Image (cartoon, rainbow, N blue to C red; front, top):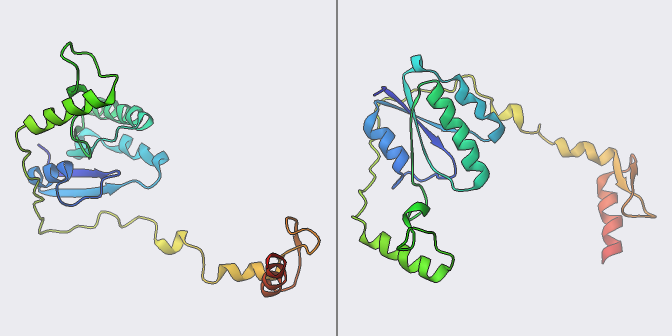
Length: 193
């Protein structure tokens, strides 16, 4: 097994009782937590390859478009020979586990729920997912975007004062003006009071 594990944070920010994070910390010397804010940036996984000697872990999400995207990522990992494993995240039972006696899915909720409850209660107790703390901390994000690069500059909103105001004739039309925003707010607020 590789020495570095990547825990891909998706919608599950739990530190305790997180199966993917627990597995990563128990089985790797180095664990990197990866959060991708913009889902269009998932191409980062195409840059992983076998020589990197890493494994990727995540908790599943059950939305149809996310499942389709997850299959593409899984296929990419198989192609690039990257070790990966995903875990049951925020659900009691996998949907395949809950079926009628003849193996077909339920169509009515009440019998489905009764069966799902029994399946969950009859399972052996799940192990407590313990996070093994690492002593060495390494920053892998030296080339990341700094918050100041993406946040607006100080007092950016003050530029609107000298350029925009609502027309007094029609509050839905806007035109350029050099009058201050304070006048704009006070004159139009009187219309609504």
